[in-house]
Length: 120
Image 1 (cartoon, rainbow, N blue to C red):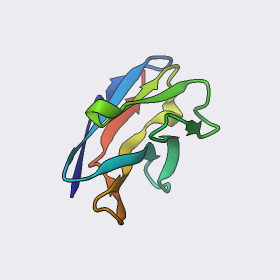
Image 2 (image 1 turned 180 degrees about the vertical axis):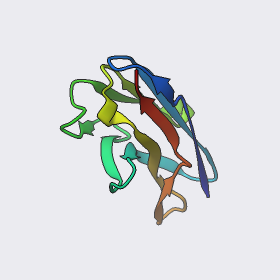
Image 3 (image 1 turned 90 degrees about the vertical axis):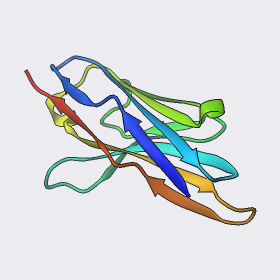
Image 4 (image 1 turned 60 degrees about the vertical axis):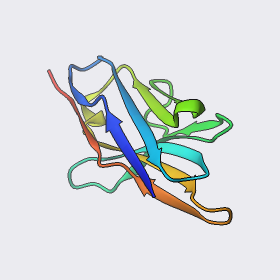
């Protein structure tokens, strides 16, 4: 079982910055890909950014150049540095990971979500 605990959300003005963190804990062999998703009211959850254990990353077109995903494998933690925030970035941000929980099985886990609000 893996627990993901997110932190760093909040209220920020347009063009401001926030840094989200998500730490994985529990019983697992390893954490593979980690990512951030977001869900705005009335919309489907969408991928924001994803990073592999080898630190290869990809981004949604809407955040490319403004957001940076990174991870600390020793701490099983993923970060999302968000800059030049726009009102349309307002959403609940969810952390996700793919964990190797036994020698031969993998599972996806979700965090509880953290609210990001961009407003003047």
